[in-house]
Amino acid sequence: MKFVTEDQVREILKVRDCIDVLRDAFRRDYVNIPRYRLKSDHSLLHVMSASTPSLTVMGLKSYGTNRDDAS
Image (cartoon, rainbow, N blue to C red; front, top):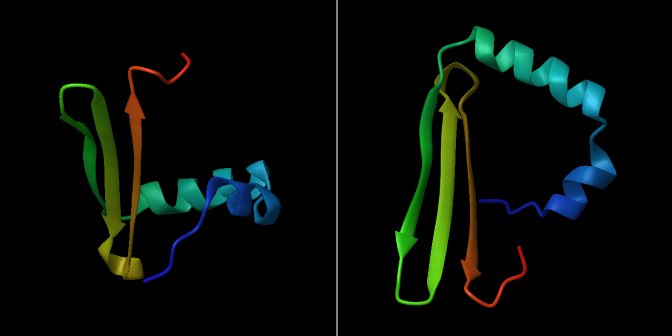
Protein backbone atom coordinates (compact mmCIF):
# COMPACT_ATOMS: atom_id res chain seq x y z
CA MET A 1 0.00 0.00 0.00
CA LYS A 2 1.27 3.47 -0.83
CA PHE A 3 0.26 6.79 0.66
CA VAL A 4 0.42 10.04 -1.31
CA THR A 5 -0.02 13.50 0.18
CA GLU A 6 -1.81 16.35 -1.56
CA ASP A 7 1.49 18.26 -1.76
CA GLN A 8 3.12 15.29 -3.54
CA VAL A 9 0.26 15.17 -6.03
CA ARG A 10 0.63 18.90 -6.76
CA GLU A 11 4.38 18.46 -7.37
CA ILE A 12 3.95 15.54 -9.76
CA LEU A 13 0.70 16.07 -11.69
CA LYS A 14 -0.41 18.86 -13.95
CA VAL A 15 -4.12 19.73 -14.05
CA ARG A 16 -4.33 18.96 -17.79
CA ASP A 17 -2.91 15.46 -17.22
CA CYS A 18 -5.40 14.83 -14.42
CA ILE A 19 -8.31 15.82 -16.64
CA ASP A 20 -7.16 13.42 -19.37
CA VAL A 21 -6.73 10.56 -16.89
CA LEU A 22 -10.13 11.20 -15.30
CA ARG A 23 -11.84 11.27 -18.71
CA ASP A 24 -10.34 7.87 -19.46
CA ALA A 25 -11.28 6.49 -16.04
CA PHE A 26 -14.91 7.65 -16.31
CA ARG A 27 -15.23 5.86 -19.66
CA ARG A 28 -14.52 2.60 -17.83
CA ASP A 29 -16.50 0.67 -15.26
CA TYR A 30 -15.82 2.08 -11.84
CA VAL A 31 -17.10 1.94 -8.29
CA ASN A 32 -17.47 5.23 -6.45
CA ILE A 33 -18.62 5.34 -2.84
CA PRO A 34 -19.94 8.82 -1.97
CA ARG A 35 -18.17 10.69 0.81
CA TYR A 36 -19.27 9.63 4.23
CA ARG A 37 -18.61 11.15 7.59
CA LEU A 38 -18.12 9.49 10.95
CA LYS A 39 -19.09 11.80 13.80
CA SER A 40 -17.96 12.09 17.38
CA ASP A 41 -18.83 14.79 19.90
CA HIS A 42 -16.24 17.26 18.59
CA SER A 43 -14.87 15.93 15.29
CA LEU A 44 -15.60 14.35 11.91
CA LEU A 45 -13.73 11.78 9.88
CA HIS A 46 -14.39 12.30 6.16
CA VAL A 47 -13.81 9.29 3.88
CA MET A 48 -13.99 8.97 0.06
CA SER A 49 -13.09 5.87 -1.94
CA ALA A 50 -13.30 4.53 -5.49
CA SER A 51 -11.92 1.82 -7.73
CA THR A 52 -11.55 1.00 -11.40
CA PRO A 53 -11.50 -2.81 -11.57
CA SER A 54 -10.36 -2.97 -15.21
CA LEU A 55 -7.24 -1.02 -14.24
CA THR A 56 -6.86 -2.96 -10.97
CA VAL A 57 -6.56 0.27 -8.99
CA MET A 58 -8.36 1.71 -6.02
CA GLY A 59 -7.93 4.76 -3.88
CA LEU A 60 -9.00 6.34 -0.65
CA LYS A 61 -8.90 9.83 0.80
CA SER A 62 -9.64 10.44 4.44
CA TYR A 63 -9.16 13.42 6.69
CA GLY A 64 -10.37 14.63 10.03
CA THR A 65 -11.79 17.96 11.10
CA ASN A 66 -12.89 19.30 14.45
CA ARG A 67 -14.76 22.29 15.84
CA ASP A 68 -11.50 24.20 16.29
CA ASP A 69 -10.63 24.00 12.54
CA ALA A 70 -10.92 27.28 10.69
CA SER A 71 -13.58 27.36 7.98
